[in-house]
Length: 430
Image (cartoon, rainbow, N blue to C red; front, side, top):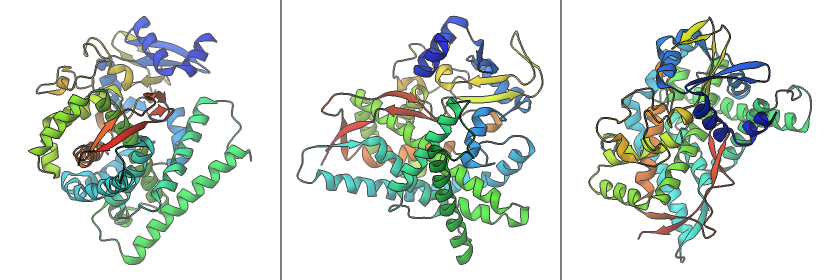
């Protein structure tokens, strides 16, 4: 009981202590299940790559996500997932990403202009940077994936999506919660918010069909799959999945990037120096070495996907350990990224780890977006968004701690969220 209370109160600390005490594979009872927690990259590689077909995403975690996303790429497995992955993969090819870059810069510039207006006549202002980055992420998703200007809707929609994700976490942490069809206040609010999201998506699809859908974006690709037998429900699920996966994940990750740069201002200055000789294009940012080292190291310390689960379809063997059929497997990139055999001084921020040949050597020692066939399809988009955000803001603003001096701690939710909030002070660099 004491362990259960600590697991809920200090999830990440409990996880790291358990790994330190019991090793690279530990079995732990949670509720009705025996949970197998893997933290060695070899074991992670077995589940995510070597024998990935034996490990399904039919787990309690993904069932809760599916309340919002439906049967999209995030929550499905097997032939259904393979078919959808093949159909939507072209939307994330380099050619498309290159075309998205200018739109991302426009979204960042709009946010920069809002900040400049706040700073007018002032030496500095404080912002809730998390809220700003969430809004920015939605604007970028709208422009990049759906060719939509969500500037006016972003603030309200951002809060709606956060509340939907809070509900997912609530259901995940309260196994005995009343079914969602019981008309409790919480359940009614969830259904109302989900209905509004569905109406927004339905309107997006309807508007695009009415004017035709030749646009070379994610929504246009989906609507062009009518001949592939893709239903309207499947289109809805993939659109919602793209919004959910590309929203809080990237914004939360970027919040921690800025927090680290506030803690390490010399790193921010080195990125600024690199920007002087960097072309602000897709190719230019992709070849800015220190910029990418900083992002990779930040995502090591604060991985956008900090927890993933799988269910063993058949009995298996992982290293010397026997795994029974239907075993629940938990992989935490947060713990894997702190494995001392692969990461010296793992809690230290050191972008040089990613200079040249990676120091960790093992390709499954760094898995901020998962790995294997289920590697997040949006990883290149997320990395580009992170690069554009820094390129659009660091040359114009200094980022400092708030007057209170209090910086947030990590609150593991769907992503690693800041608690209580990520307040920062910004100053104009002129």
